Length: 227
Image 1 (spheres, rainbow, N blue to C red):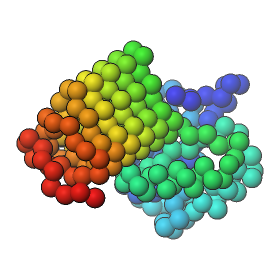
Image 2: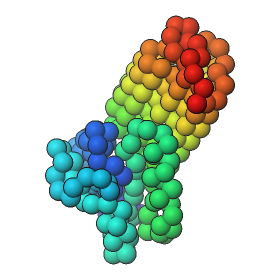
Image 3: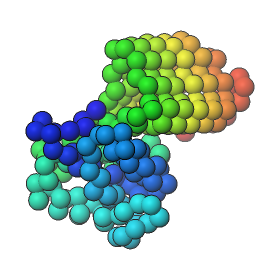
């Protein structure tokens, strides 16, 4: 995780989004600062929220403000999305990437209570929320969310833009395709493959491979619709 510039200066962070998940992300940054990490939270970027304080979130403005920050050459500017919906998160990442600024990098947020095991690879722009667990030899893609108390076990491969919701359990040797969504409290047993874009409902138990772009629910999980 990028905590400090090479000369020891603070890293400036901008959060993309200003809803409920953004409030959580901002609180995680505060937790990192309390743990001694040198991170300076500039605020949130959201085209659909008024500038100013929005509950616990400081909204800087829309994407034009991010462009202004980059034109001002803010050193070590880092960025992370804070939107739970996978397609929306992908669109926001594309908007940021389209700016093509050499002064902006995607930031991986690892909460102080998150656990990451041996030889794990965590992609850029990914969030590891409080008490989340990534064990040994896991590959977690870019711009993923591993939410509160969610876990991914050994030798699993998680694609980009995946959202694993609070309390979900992904067992060992599981394959999660890009933009898969695992609902709160769901369980995916070992050696299962979940296709790209598939939604696993809250509390489901997945015991068989699941194709892409479907929704599965229940115990055991069954397909209820195609997207």
